[in-house]
Length: 226
Image (cartoon, rainbow, N blue to C red):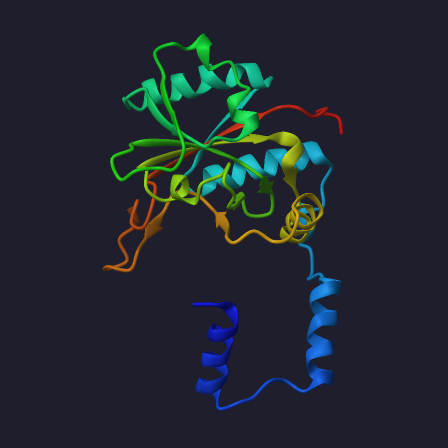
């Protein structure tokens, strides 16, 4: 179904025709201006403080974090995490250039398959586009090099994120997305901790709609004094 046919069906349901030109122009202007909302004071920190806040909020939301000194330490951090969780050393990994460039050969016991996740995958490794400090949220836009299924199907998701990609507030993450990508992606997932639900008798259940575990490997690629 095309976009025009979808919009036509919505208008038909609302019993409304196309918007008048002045209202359509007003909406186009608003979309171009990207009005900003209030930015919480808790996120207005020096960058090192934003990274620390991001880590605390991920852990507060039942996720775990490993901080490594450089990209070369990522494979060891991933292997150590899998061993600590008694998970198999098999990964479905996003075919992102940053992930491909990591020295995975230093951990030859890891079995890595690139591409979309399958229902049988226990562990996925995703490339983190941005981290949002105010809530400990990961921004994961869809792209051929970032398959969305890696965020949904595996029981354990590992996200590799550079500290330089952590921002204070949501508005800053959206600014970065607009500046770095050619147009908006088809899908942008905002992930705060592992999937969970307390719908049934208010009992918290992890892994209700997606990964049961979320582990973030943060590459310390910024000056801690910044």
